[in-house]
Amino acid sequence: MQRAAGVVATRHRGDLDGAEALLAAFPTAQARTLGFYLLADLALGLLRAQSGQSMDELIRERSLHLATAAGRPPGGGERR
Image (cartoon, rainbow, N blue to C red; front, top):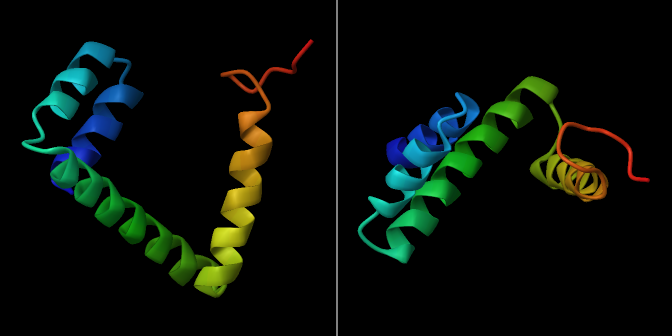
């Protein structure tokens, strides 16, 4: 999970090569999947605790948000 968090932090600093190197450092695809699953579980648990929503409500809301965001280009601009 720490390595997965490092990938996210490195990417947000704009170091895409560093993020790619951290991704490649996972020993297996299963380890990478588990790391990101645990990180997502922690993040969703923190959001749930803060919002007071059930996990089902939170997941439904986040899924809709992601689906909406996927329809926009990076940076939140509008499609033309």
